[in-house]
Image 1 (cartoon, rainbow, N blue to C red):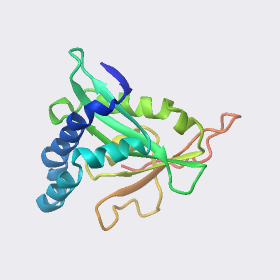
Image 2 (tube, rainbow, N blue to C red):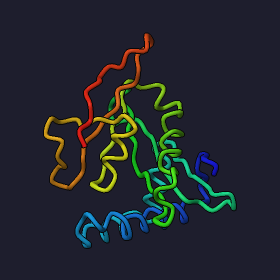
Image 3 (cartoon, one colour):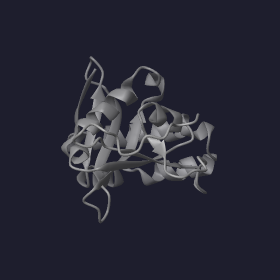
Length: 171
């Protein structure tokens, strides 16, 4: 498997991958109508805008097929914070370490390195996965918001190696 920056000509494939993830994976935890609306919203033009506002990566299998994607960008109005979004893996490829490899690439990106904190909004499906990668809930409630998303963050390590925030994730 190879993880690399996405190319403009791959946007149609990436859009399809994201929609399949909504309609085949996330639909287990969210209402069908909500997932169908998300899929309708992630047309290639919208996915291209996501890619243009950050650094989008894709994971490819040995045959060159795109099997996963993820994006890191700066938080609006903040030089100190970045945001991870649109992490999706083909449904038939879940549980094979692809999401972890995509996250490793995103955390190796210069946008991650240039910020102090990275935030993401995790689905019910994925919040435990992000917890295993060191992301922590931003509220004490550790409950999803009204849209069913967990607000999570990871403080980057300081120069002296001490983590800025160290509370444990309860699963």
